[in-house]
Every structure is written in structure tokens, then in C-alpha cells.
Amino acid sequence: MPMKHTILALATLILIVSSANAQKTKLAPIFNGKDLDGWTTFLRTKGVNQDPDQVFQIRNKELHVSGKEFGYIATTKTYSDFHLVLEFKWGEKKYPPRENDKRDAGICFYVEAEDKIWPKSIECQIQEGDTGDLWLIGKTTALINGKQTQAQDYHRVVKREDAERPKGEWNQVEVIAKEGRFKFLVNGTLVNEGEELSIREGRILLQSEGAEIVYRNIKVAAL
Image 1 (cartoon, helix red, strand yellow):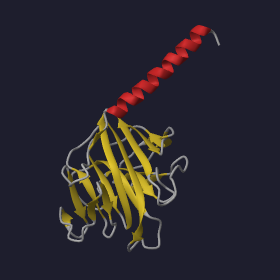
Image 2 (cartoon, rainbow, N blue to C red):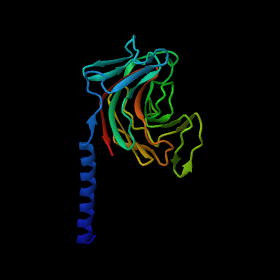
Image 3 (tube, rainbow, N blue to C red):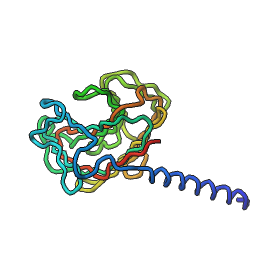
Image 4 (cartoon, rainbow, N blue to C red):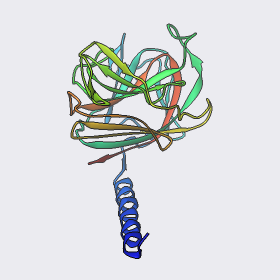
């Protein structure tokens, strides 16, 4: 390769790395590890901010979700173009109606204002063996691999590959959404992507769906 091409390629690589690092530095915590400031809880049989069984608890600066009842913890703030990064680890307990199923949870974004199970949104699935799947909820749609999805109550797009670590280990999940495009990364591997999302602004939520799960280092950067 001619010297000038080598220099150009090296300069481009440095620019890409620098841009990625610059974006990482903008990430700011949205969970302070002390309380649920900036978040609301919702449980199917209890409603908003009613959690007598402590489905959502904070221990050692981590968010523990028992999974005992279907529901979620959601940001009070809405987001449009953003980069979300968090880590999760599965716990031991599972509850009806999923006590014999895979451990299940999820990250929903662009969540509508109405609280219910489940609100209109886009979901990055967190489920044993399926982390990184896309779920389009409430008739939302997207363009995936050049193909337009159909508006349905629930529509699944399976991830490209499995990058989840074994149960008991921490996993990092990233959701990047900008101008109708999205990318899901699991432990640094791009596992799903698409464009032309039919909704582009809303809250971010973390599900409680019958399985014990722990979250930490929950951060967001506006893009």
C-alpha cells in the first residue's frame, strides 16, 4: 500500500476511535445507586410508585429486581437520540407464570406515557439465550435488512448471534438510537440493528418479568 494511503487509513482509524471515545465520555449515570430519583415504578396489580413487596430494591449501589410481579422501572425523562449502556446479571429466583421458562427481562425505549403491561415501545430483549432480540410492541414498526415489518401487537426480530455470557456473570448491553435507526450491542458485539422506527421519542424502562435480575452502571448520553 502506498505511504499516503497508509497514513490516510491510520488517520481514519484514529478519528473513528477518537469519536467513539468522545461519545463514551458523554455517558452520564441515570441511576445514582442510592435511591430511585429520576425513576418511577409500575406494577401490574399495584400501579405507579406502589411497591409494598419491594420488587425494586437498591443494594450495594446496584438495582435488584426480584421479578415477583410483572412491571417495570421507568425514567421520568424522555429521550429521542441517545446511547444507553448498562450491565446486568441474572439472579436465582423465578416466579409464576414463568417459573419453568427462561429467565426474562428487557430494556424498552421510546415508551409511551401510559403505564400498562406492556406499553407501546421498542424493546431490546434481555432473556437467557435471546439477549439482543428486537421486540416491536404496540404496533410499532421498523425496517430490518431492507424489509418493512408489519404493525402487530408484538413482533420479534431474532438477533444475529448470541454474545451473552453464562448465568452468574455480568453482561454489558448497549442501545444506540438516532434519527430512527437503532443498534443493539451485547458485550461489545453488534447483535441487531435496523432503521425507520415508527416512534422516536419516549421514556426508557427496565422490565420485571418473572425472574430475578440485577442492574448496575446505567448510563445515557444524548446524541
